[in-house]
Image 1 (cartoon, rainbow, N blue to C red):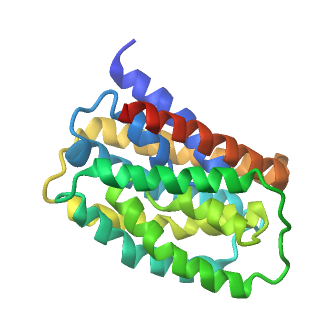
Image 2 (cartoon, helix red, strand yellow; image 1 turned 90 degrees about the vertical axis):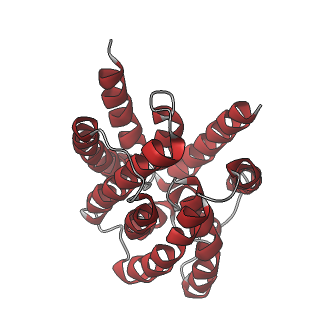
Length: 245
């Protein structure tokens, strides 16, 4: 089986999973596509940021169809993440990524541990939403640096601040769409594109993300969604540690 087919099928599966969780696909597409594309900064990161924006957008459509997107909060959050993400993407050209990966792993381990602890969702999350806006700045900078989009860290942050899981997924999906595209800007002058591969991955990624969001909206209970996200974080953290050593 050719690398092209493997990348296409693999990305489609990852897009469905990311759409179910209200994420862009970059958090899993970065390590997956790195198996086939040798240049992380100039090939993998530009492609995954573009994929992240499109898959998050189509996941938003999937959640919005069932009324799980709080548009006001999502738009405000997206402004903060969009302005912050390019800072990290710019710094990626100058700072050794190994040091930042350690910080990323520490944050992810903490979030994974917290998601498995019992806590109550809150009806009035306005005050905690202001706190979410504060956390969104360093999260977006870190995500832009790693080329993964901020959703992988922002989604559990919203849940831990009291947002119901499906609504957190809907808000998160829209909020990470613009910063994915804004974080792509610093890469444009040096990005290397395979246009055939890019177009095919964008199509299967968009379709997969929409399908995943609809599956969650219709069939996955919120508590189960939180647990799935916790398991995913543990798996991805273990993979990151493995790649470091």
